[in-house]
Amino acid sequence: MVMELLEQRFPETEFTFTDAGISSTCSTTGAFRLQDHVLSKGPVDLLFVEFAVNDDQDARHGRRECIRGMEGVVRRTRVHNADADIVITYFVNPEMLETWQSGRAPVPAAAHREVAEYYQVSTINLAKEVADRIAAGRLTWEQFGGTHPKPWGNQICASMIDRLMSKAWTRRLPEDAKAEAHKLPEKPLDEKSYFRGRLTGPEEAEIVRDMTVVVPEWSKIKGGFRSRFAGKELLCGSKPGAEMRLRFGGTAIGAYVLAGPDAGIVETSIDGGAYRKCNLYHDYSKGLHYPRTVVFDGDLEPGEHELRLRISAEKDERSSGHAMRVLHFVAN
Image 1 (cartoon, rainbow, N blue to C red):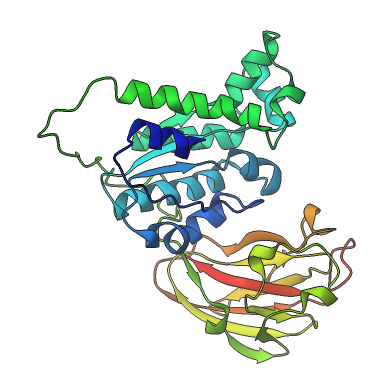
Image 2: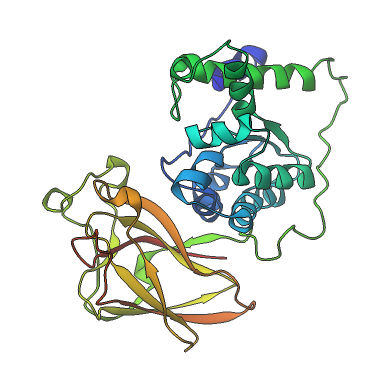
């Protein structure tokens, strides 16, 4: 809908649209994959971003992680192109709807608003619009379409974006008009935000034992599988004690994984430190190889580090195995 709005407003402009949404993923994943999936396509003029719902119901992020992810997206985009305009949208789920109706902002939306205000980024508060209309009796949750809105519900959001465009472009620009770079704050809101985030291929890992980089035989593995991940090589292991090492630079290290019904627990050590456990199994893993990013440590000192990772003999009681399937390692 928004693509059509832009084409109608600027009929002589040739647009390149990049649809980089991945269902289920949060702003942490978004920040780490931004370079490969969005910025690599060219200088981005206008970016629409929404992670309010998935930062809430999927990742269950607190304020810090919401800021680190969203600031990672916003600051990295502005470093990439200082002229880039950004619009942050807040969608809504039932629990968030109740929070808005009680007069409060859910944690993700409040954190994303902090980022938006700091970087002077426009926002579309679809969530509050829906809450207000329902309270006024002009809309029902069923009419809107729920967490994943129907076309009619999405049209409400598109119309709000259209009004934002009208407000921004009320007057015709003079012939000699030039884009003015947005001022980038000297310091980030959080020094450890993921604005230096990047993906590292699974082949970069040094396998110590019982792991391999391979395209999984998904047809033989229990659980739903999304076709967008078909044919991709993953670092896979399923035996307790399987181990790998990875050298990396930066302040954070983690993994972008597909965590299905057999997802296990991994133990990680940074620079020879004590091992920490990380449960890959997610509430939504029961029937789906669920895409999620787990950050093993996001508070390292800048510099070169080594990750040691091994599969634990322990597992979530809901899981049928000890599997780890890594699409990418993520570092900041």
